[in-house]
Amino acid sequence: MVKKRTCIFISGYGTNLKYLINNSRNQNFPIRISLVISNNKRAKGILYAKKNSIPYLVINTNKRNFENLILKELKKYKISLICLAGYMKIISKKFLNAYGKKIINIHPSLLPKFKGLNTFKRILKNKEKKTGCTVHFVNEKLDGGAKIIQKSFFINKNDNEETLKNKTQKLEHRAFSEAIVKIFRYN
Ligand code: GRF
Image 1 (tube, rainbow, N blue to C red):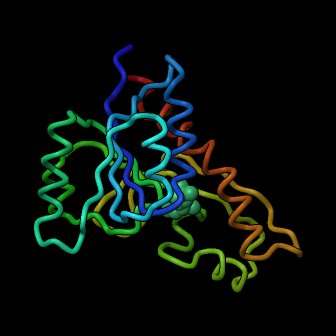
Image 2: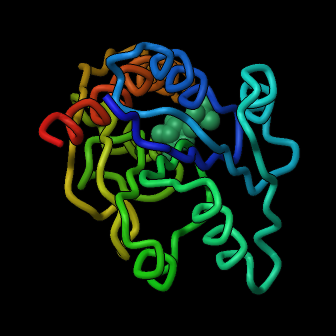
């Protein structure tokens, strides 16, 4: 199997990146992680790239042409899949069109519910019975593309933002890899 060369975009802790790196070591897993891009030079996730000798780039998204810089690197590394793993920047329509290949994102809610930020606070306020995570294709709408996989759990009376985050992340770490296997199952 020829593994798809994949770039992971991060901004923070990179725990999803960590699990993707581990799973990509399995020879039957459809991707190899060829590049990590962070828009935050202090992102802890960069350490996982370093530890695993994966090339990484820190991109200053305040620069006017930052998306062109990213596109150039994606071409250089022959990237055919982008995974947004806690990347806190919206992908522009221009970028989506210019890249033209698959981009997927992980979001800590059962989309289409609770798009955007501060999900756990809003989930609790809304007294939801269930929550979870979603992996979806990225389109020009925020957290809006077609769903690939969703995982959920029931919320307890005692849950708070912290516990919801921990439970959701546990599911995310499995969901991201399962979504990748799912989208490449037939090609
Ligand atoms: C995840 O909860 C993801 O759903 C959201 O950002 C968080 C990233 O966590 N988009 P990490 O950096 O992978 O630990």
